Image 1 (cartoon, rainbow, N blue to C red):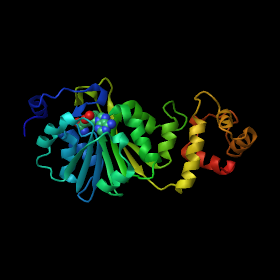
Image 2: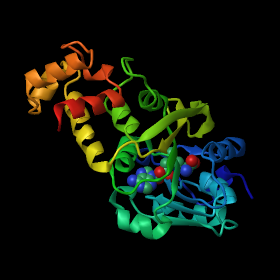
Image 3: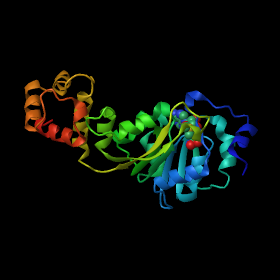
Length: 273
Ligand code: SAM
């Protein structure tokens, strides 16, 4: 197989920044990502953003089946060539943002893993779709900007801890698997990256989880405000929140950033919402 750069040149492909097109070509790195994701031949894998198909091909070497979405139809001839020997890989040329759960189920079933070098402009919506939605993979191993990885894996009270940290922690164990410098991408972006693995767990019934999610959203609605004030703006009575915080051994001027997902669960029970 010719080097990817030659194949891209052959079809006159020009990178489109709007779509976050920063491709990976290093075979060792691609195989390491597949290994970080723990992919075996029983797995159905969903990839978002096939690009030139390098990660798709590495996934297809190990998985039972790979379905990859790609928004840019100009990549069709490149993908046909790169995936010529990967019969278990299927590329769907569609904007992933418009794909319904029903369509996903028909393609990958209900037991699947997500592995992707995500287009960075839609990293958060994609992660939150699976964290909050009804259709969940068993795990997601995704390449994200290092700053996002730090936020996902942050501890309560640290500067990186925020709404996304608590929201993801409600349903996932989070682990940064590897640091990937910008020089590993073609073309290199202006930030470094990390792969992060999110393993989905059933921490609590979904209805209860939705209630805790509402509380987390309200708690982080204004970053510099106290929890009591943020929750009060969202309609939770001030006195009741203050009493609940006291019962939890927290100060009345505590901020959302200091509470773990487990604290939010306790708070939800004390507020009985
Ligand atoms: N997987 C390839 C790799 O690792 O080299 C490409 C990764 S590149 C960071 C992201 C890919 O996602 C690009 O090919 C881009 O065209 C595609 N993409 C961007 N927005 C998309 C969307 N909304 N739906 C599907 N694919 C999208």
